[in-house]
Length: 145
Ligand SMILES: [Ca+2]
Image (cartoon, rainbow, N blue to C red; front, side):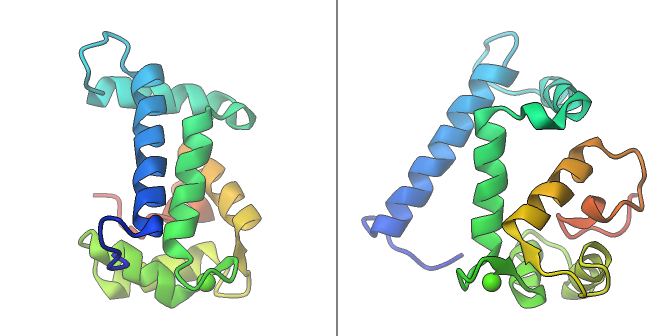
């Protein structure tokens, strides 16, 4: 997304972070050790997380920070609507839906989405049973079908 070539230190750092995320994910979620994380294993792991969000696994914490850094393209410590929309539309959502989602989790753009705010929204995304909880919009989707 950022156009960094292989060999660029930022490319290598990002690659290393993703490999660490995968390592942690595989070690904790791949219950039957077949080298793959199945849908069921994935859900079981996040269900465990939802029961105690203060007890996040290392890789889950890395994943959250990775997503924050990915979205905060300007590096100013805050995700703005344009940054959010750019990332979420890259995986197939329309810009309009991303903008609607941003409005929902930023309380109509009145909240600065800093890393701390994002961390709280992230916990909500994985643990809240309320479909309208602001955290449920951090991946850009506003519909649930
Ligand atoms: Ca930013």
